[in-house]
Structure formats: structure tokens, C-alpha cells
Length: 429
Ligand code: AMP
Ligand code: GLY
Image (cartoon, rainbow, N blue to C red; front, side, top):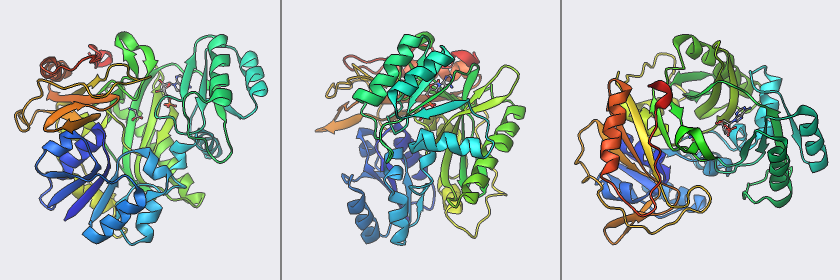
């Protein structure tokens, strides 16, 4: 069968690479893809980003299954449209994707269904928002309501930072947030302490299969310093998710969410990603939902997945197949991915820098993979194209060995202005 992956980042490279390994897959198209997917002979890049044109192409090509990588096409309703035309696609509908696309929606949803999360209030009037943070005090967290490519959250350690965040989210919109129908809004919430984990499941309606756990590194610089980014590295599994925490996450967050969505008349199908804060005594609160897999978490997670991804997503899009008996097989070793980011990332990433020292395609053993993200081919030479450029991912046991391998490979790769954290995995070592 022919399958289509929508997106062009590191997550989509990893998904396409894994789907292509399935015996049932003849070809994986990636729209629009990147230099890494262009260089893999089993993958074909498709330079279509318009969703209607993509749907017409998928109909003409008889695409058997479409998998959506990023949130923007989901929030734009790509699943509703493909399904309305009889195409098989894995992901939430536009209404269900509000769990990610509107912080105000997801906070109200969690409150209504008793899902543990930080106390909060939503504001569109800056004066009321300013008064609220004055009353609450710092530290406090200010979040833009709409999609902001991972940059719409300010963890304000002082009141001054909180006031500034309110103004630039509600008044200037310097972040370029995609506002929801209600216009500019912010969610202001209680600051939580603990350790974060990324908890992802594959689900359909009220059934869920958990993927391996992981932990992301959101800050740009070593020691968790500097601005928030989409993620500078990740590893799997995350030891903070003990079997007890895992059971709690399923019982207190994932299952009530799927039941709540069904009860509200918007059943959820797709990847569901709960960002969890795990307190020292093992209690959990939900920081956010994403309606897709994480990037870069996907890269180490899929390097560890031994089961067939196509079979999993095929079952998840077949109403006749129960997900209850699916047992995924994972490599027992850890996997760790280090992001190499462009000059100027996250605020003003530069494009067009030549990338040198990439391993030949197929030049690495099965224990490591350089996933491409912001790259494109200029002639036959890969150059940078935006924020996160590559994610060098390796397996190893213990985690220290995965980390050593990933950094050994990363050391051979260069481009001007390259940014890389040197401490990925530090919480688990
Ligand atoms: P979010 O997009 O909501 O996950 O927020 C991005 C990042 O901000 C999270 O990964 C956390 O590191 C941090 N964050 C979000 N909400 C809180 C909170 N209530 N308390 C502390 N840190 C938070
Ligand atoms: N790495 C965090 C995310 O994908 O949202």
C-alpha cells in the first residue's frame, strides 16, 4: 500500500522511516518532507502543502492511509476533510484537536471532567489579567490561548515578567499566535514544581495503547537555561514515569480524557500527548495536551519501537479492530536524540547554511539514525532550512551509552552557527 505522511520535520522523517520498514508498505510519500526524506530511496517527497490539493492528490493516487505529523493541519480540519472524501486518515478532527489548539478549551475541559491540572483563569481583558497576577504573585505561568509553535508559554519568575507577557500576548501579539474565534486570550495558571514527562498514546474513541515514555528538554541552553524552544533533545524511556506513575497517567488523565471527549460528543482518534508534571511524591498534573506526537520525542521513541507502526495505525483506523489486545514491542535499551539547531533559533533562525559531515544514507548501523528536520537539498547538497535542523538519535544501554553514541555522531556534523545542548539526558544519568 501507499501511505502519506503530512509534515516535514524530524518527527515526520522518523514516522516515514518507520512506516517504510513495514512489509505491507510499497511507498511512503512525505508532504512536503525535507532533505532527509528526499535522500531515502524508500520515501518520496511531495511538494504540496495546500490541504485541498493534497486530498485530491491522495484520492487520485489511492493512498491507503494518511498520517498527520504536526498540529496545524489538524487544527485546520484535514482529518474531517479527508474522511468526508472517503480517505483513511489517522488523527483527531478539528473539534477534537482543540485539546491542543485552544488552551482555554483544554483547561475548561479538564476542569469539567476532573482531570488533574494547575489552577487557572482565562482572560481577554489585559486590565483584569494584570490585576489577577498582582493578586496571585509570582512565580506564575502565562499562556497564549492559540497555537504558537511551542513559544506561547511564559513561566514568569517575577511579576514584571508576568505583566510583560500579558501585554505581548494580548496587545502586540509579537509571538504571531494563531488566535481562536474568541480573539486574543491568555490562560494564567499556578506554577507547578516537579519533573516533566511526555506521555503519548495511540487512541480511538475510548481505547488507548500507550507508547514508550520520554522526556524532552525545552530550554535552548545547557542546565535548562535560556528561552523555551520546541525541544532541544529527548530520550526514552523516562525513569520518572515509574510503573505507578504510568498507571496513574492512564487512570487519571488518558482514560478520563477519552471518556470526556466522547461524552461531549467529540470522540478522539489520533495520537494524544499529555505533558505531565510529576511531583516528588508521584502525583501528576497535566501541563498540556498535544493532539500529535512530540518532536523531538518521536525520534527516540520510534527508534525503540520494534512493532510495525503501519499495523498499529491500521488497527487504530479500523473501527472493527479492538486496540485492547495490542502489545507493542520495544527495544529494552534507551534511545536519546540530540537536536542540532540553526543559528538564531528560536527567535530568528537562519536558513541556507551548508551541512557537512552527514553520515551516508545507510551508513549508520540500526542503532543510530540522523533524522532531518529543517533541511532542504540545494542541488544534491543538504542545507539548513529553519529552526531545528537535525536530530541525532542513538540506542544504548545504559542511557549513558546512547548519549555517548549520539554525541559521537553529532560531533562529525557541522554547519555555521550550529547550536546544540551538551547535556541531553542529564536528569536520568
Ligand atoms: P505547555 O506548552 O503548556 O506545555 O508549556 C510549555 C512549558 O512551560 C512546559 O513544558 C513547562 O516546562 C512549562 N510550564 C507550563 N505550565 C507550567 C506550570 N503550570 N508550572 C510550571 N511550568 C509550566
Ligand atoms: N517537544 C514538545 C512537543 O512536541 O510539543
